[in-house]
Length: 581
Image (cartoon, rainbow, N blue to C red):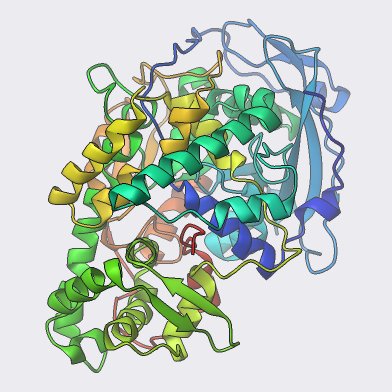
């Protein structure tokens, strides 16, 4: 599909409304994955890395695969200021082949941003980042969090670069509706997940309609949106910035992108730091589990259930002075009774600005899942659950701050709201389908018995893929044993609701020399939570000094400690719940 021109300044500036709106869409299919039935194109090892800075400057063709099967021109990056409020950042766009089998054909426009190194004379190179998703905006991540996510040493020695993967956000996005209003109307009717038979039937119908829209509007873009193609794009961008080897920091789904890049380009890796690992077989599929949905394979429901168990335990220990929920009795009993009541009697909450949100059982579960990402927000979430339990409709204080950021407000006309197609794109083509969408209800019911509430929620996350049924012939789905000749840093948090800690070792086992660092704490990834982990990452990225395998770090952010109102940076890391009233 021919690319659309993009204004770097106009398409990459970020407002609070834009960020919040995009978080809602990202959350609709957060952690998406599906059964891998796609035949991947394995790339064999070939020539080692070379300095491509001169070729990049000239825009000369270079190989984008290790067996030299593809030649593509290196993008020429014209860095410009990003616009008002983003003076510290530079923005650019890059043209890459839409189809790497036709490198001289149509192109896709990628949006990029970078935070330049503060010590350019001693600059090592570029730190490529991916915030996860899939469907997360790398541009927004760097512009919102780039200054705080890394140590002063990393900031001094690297340009920190984020790019929107193809089909996502400002990179020729896959869109599913003809207008903003049409998409709002369609998404506003969808709950986070269905429970009753009538809800299940409607959920199937709505997802079928959405998939039809996505096929009609963005078929070609989706069919070329595999993670393997994103990895090929990243390799072209690596050459465009003049780096001989890739230095990369990936979070959550970004660890799957890291594993894919390492598999396709093992001799082009300088450093891989991978936080909140997604086991590649669970995402891309594996023989013998073709009938399991990605929500089941990723075991997010189990990770969330374990983490919520810690939430309740620590709330009880903290007592009512630090955890409001404990003032109503045993926190677990109070929560279970409240969730049961919400199944038949949704609550209408009033925000400080007078806006209202309806909280159903599904909304409450989804909001709890999202809040588990940040232990610094647990006290605020306990306050919100307390108000739901007590029937107090008027939110205030920490509970209001959390709700305003995370609950799906009734949409305001004119918000910049990217299409759900960006989330579906890579997930659906990477992971395939079970071929049995009606089997999701049985899977959800079974998982709910082992991981109450969260198992049911996460079992449904990729139902749209069952109806979309598009593939990318260039997707890579394994095998995953790696040949990278440098130590790889793999980080896992003991109680991570979205990428369970149990996947850390299986992920690391694919690399010849992986160094696992365990953060003894809570939440999704270590961003903003552990200075020990930050220093470990910094030493690895800057000095290539890898810690001993099996190292541990403590967490700075203690649940139910200090001010109950989370700061803006903590709130920014919490995904909004799926849109649905």
